[in-house]
Amino acid sequence: MASSSSISTCSLNRGSVARKAINFNKEFNCNVLLNRLSVNAKLSADLTYSRLLTREKSLKWEQSQRLSRNGIRCCALEVEYRPAFTMGMKFQLDDVIEAQQFDRDTLSAIFEVAREMENIEKKSPGSQILKGYLMATLFYEPSTRTRLSFESAMKRLGGEVLTTENAREFSSAAKGETLEGNFLYLLVKVLRNDTIRTVEGYSDIIVMRHFESGAARRAAATAGIPIINAGDGPGQHPTQALLDVYTIEREIGKLDGIRVGLVGDLAYGRTVRSLAYLLAKYQDVKIYFVSPEVVKMKDDIKDYLTSRGVEWEESADLMEVASKCDVVYQTRIQRERFGERIDLYEEARGKYIVDKDVLKVMQKHAVVMHPLPRLDEITVDVDSDPRAAYFRQAKNGLYIRMALLKLLLIGW
Image 1 (tube, rainbow, N blue to C red):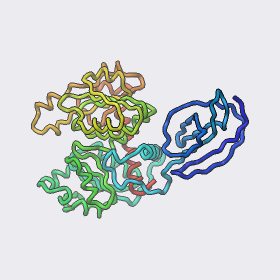
Image 2 (cartoon, helix red, strand yellow):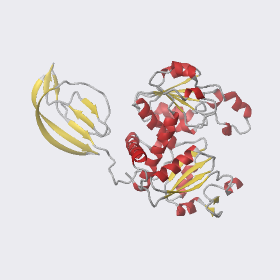
Image 3 (tube, rainbow, N blue to C red):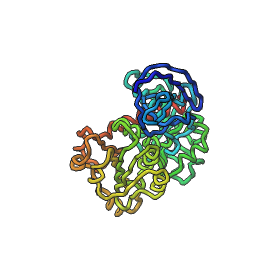
């Protein structure tokens, strides 16, 4: 239907609205697309149908002026969504402790910064964004990939690193003292006894891995500088979950409406716990849990997903689940979580393996992910398949951690 119309344009930014009139001739078709905006707008009661157009950095909601078609009245409004986070603003989080801290808007904004960090890493070596800042890494559990990822992220932005690994062995933590009061030997030419509070005097941000769930939260309560949880026992690993969701978006092209199979050690795997929390932020997501009986996903995650309206299902059939999923997220059965129960570890290990047979039933667009390191739960012949995304996933961790360091230290 052709019509000469006058449309009002409204720009909303956290409740602020600017309007202007636009006159044009246009053929308009009222389409319905049910979707949610992250802003609240009070619209005319005549507003009946709308078309939501998605842009990379803005959302526009258009509708024609009041028109009459089969008795349906439509009115016109264009809403431009402006990012809530502008350059120079302080990052709204003081620490990164758990996945529940993030909402969709914040996740999208962090991913945008991560894309900027990728450009810096590839096109602007020698960046000095974090020049003059010092990051301390305190790892009470052994780590190679996560620690090096953080250290590389800091150095690529011009910052400096004060590092120690296996702090549990080289500190009074080995003597049974608490995290808040224990003394950590920092190997910086001479051994020195330091507490979390003293370490903050040496650095601007602390990245910590600990063998106890909740350790990062206790450290954050003690320290006056940002704390990043790089894994706390069987608790959470929020930066891994952030890079996982970022990878899924890049590989699959969307986060709403996806099907994800979480496989392996779901009881003690902190990566899958944090990932489940983040996936619950998105619409029409279904999660499949595939694991040996002894390492099934714990009830707190299942209850959380149910409370958020996220559909989940437990299955013993990896092949069936793999055929349905956009993402098969494999994890290692963690020997260190079983203590003296070697029998239970051997019972669980090797039950679910992603190999060429699993790839055959997977969809062409689907991907295999893994937080690494792996043992034998993904066979090496899978590596050459383009759907093997785990090394790209690890690389994305660099960009996410560069983004977090930049945001926590200097803001948006």
